[in-house]
Length: 217
Image (cartoon, rainbow, N blue to C red; front, side, top):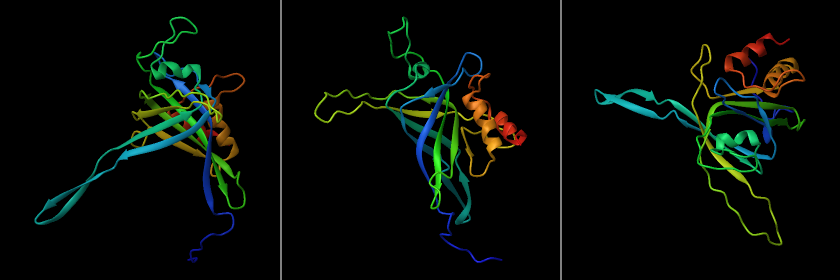
């Protein structure tokens, strides 16, 4: 047995940044084509649940029950793609006109974060994929221009409903780590999520993504 070692060169990892946002609006049947999300400035993940409830019997702690887990997240951006508008409760009776307070479409979402180490700040990246999200209404602030101008930002709080994955509990989010998976496996995931020269970007099911990773060499 080897003795544990701390802070070995190349093992001090960190995560940073957010990029390569994609939105996949839900169509009447399945999921519509994905659209690139430019201007993404932040994604905040907010898991919930897994709260313990202690059971007592015979004057002692008898067992502990754990509640189910939920997954929510917040998107922050300078702008959003037109394809996201139905997910934000917007409709366009005529191009250039928007009306709000419409039915909000569910959507899928993906983004990347960087993985760095003490030796290589660009060691790799992680692709995060979310299914069955719904955006909640959020406030928008409009301020006067001044001598320190800044662009307006948008923010959406989102909740999810998990989807099936074979052999595991239902999930709403998955991650694909390029520092562990091979380049071919990451390409297989990206070809599905981002599209290719001959195929549109789509949001596969968790099982389809797992199968693509297993099949890649």
